[in-house]
Length: 95
Image: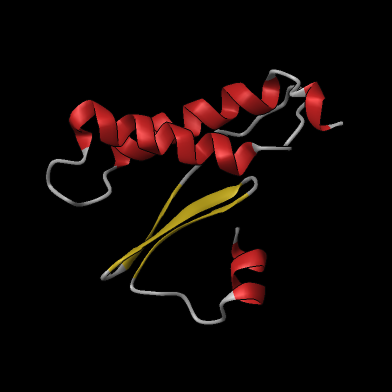
């Protein structure tokens, strides 16, 4: 997420995907664009949400959606759905 990255690294690289809780995902690929996330009203446990997002992105890449070498909205959709399922599923092992 944005605060962690800034604390650890400083200025962002040319290619980066940043998650930031309920705020839009920020994608930096030569230019900056944002992608909205689904607003959740169910009880959530955010432990592991970033890992779940990354896993969803890896699933999208493995399914052939990354053939152009560019992050696409459909890839982010998969990642967001994957992480949303994770955080609304309880993830009680992180409590």
